[in-house]
Length: 119
Image (tube, rainbow, N blue to C red):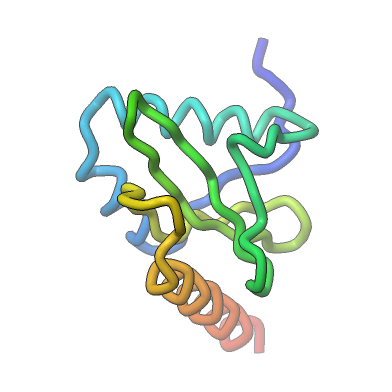
């Protein structure tokens, strides 16, 4: 029996796919596991999912594999659609501002495209 989904993870362009394809099979499996958890849990534990303070609706999916930390940025559309934007391997305690800016840019690009497609 398939689990109920509370939200659906969707890819926007190749940003996330490019990041995922560059990871090892074990890391890919862990990332996919965390994304499925986010889709199927009504309340997502903050160790896996967190709003980025100071942003307009950018969230990070947090994946820990051994001593490596990975972050995947995403945002919501129409309530429950997660659009997976960019991802990266975390090298320090703080999330790099350049990665957050990139996620904001991708979100803006998505919103502008959606607007032009609906008019």
